[in-house]
Image 1 (cartoon, rainbow, N blue to C red):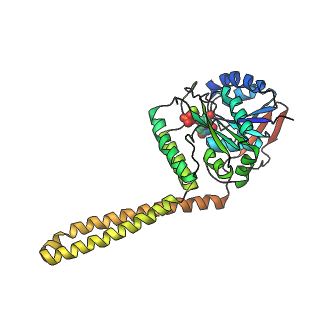
Image 2: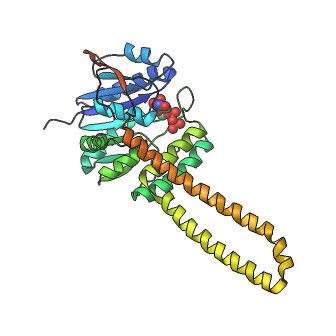
Image 3: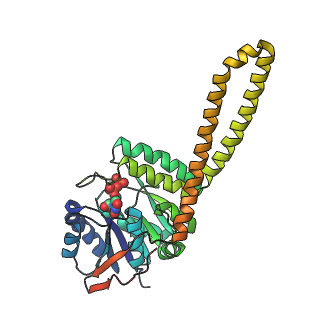
Length: 323
Ligand code: UDP
Ligand code: MG
């Protein structure tokens, strides 16, 4: 039986100091697999020497996809998916936090158990506490909204069957969180433990603001819980309002008009409270309307400038299908 081909997709954004080491560690692993492979590096609009370094390493089995600008990690991975021709598609980071040596285990697990997705749990995660705490919160939220019980959603070292990747591409969803999106299309998902290392060089590309935006996106694209939450809070506030009104009436009857006049300030407080709730509700509505607007425009979430392979330029800005 012909052994299935493996594609590795790696997003690269200003990783000039990591790339040499990445090739040094990844390529021996790939050739030891004893099967057909390709490594697709997606340059996500790097402003440093990353693209030059990538192009210098154009040996057999390596493809480089150049995006027109920086679109973000998950969009970059999607661009790689479009180019990937393997039966098993593996994603990983370029900063060597995901050890390439774990790839054979991912593939073996997938083939032995006939899984559609192999996720990973980072053993002894080497990240700052400010990176870990938000992750923990997000992991538990993601578990709830996807209904899939995985421990670690954030680790990008994952293996997907070709069919799952094709479904994700076909959906053309403007979602920015691939591990969660895959859970929509795959049934047989398993998790294995993998090592985690310090970033080899450079710094994390995720500032706190960017993390918040990524996770807000994750929640609004996978769940309408914020909408429902608004509805419930709205109800609750309305009931509280009625109750409070009753208390004011009763107090006025018992203590007389004098007391009620001083209560004007309480009424102001109540008013502000409701106004706040209203604005919050509007904000949430706005977020969903914004999503609809984005979807309707169908503006591509990335555009590819060129695709290089060792056999030469595959395509140049020819309206390569993007979404
Ligand atoms: N990345 C990218 N585009 C971006 C941000 C990050 O392609 O806009 C890549 C980055 O080069 C790396 C991976 O995504 O290969 C993960 O990024 P990083 O290590 O900064 O994230 P963290 O490990 O802190 O989650
Ligand atoms: Mg990293």
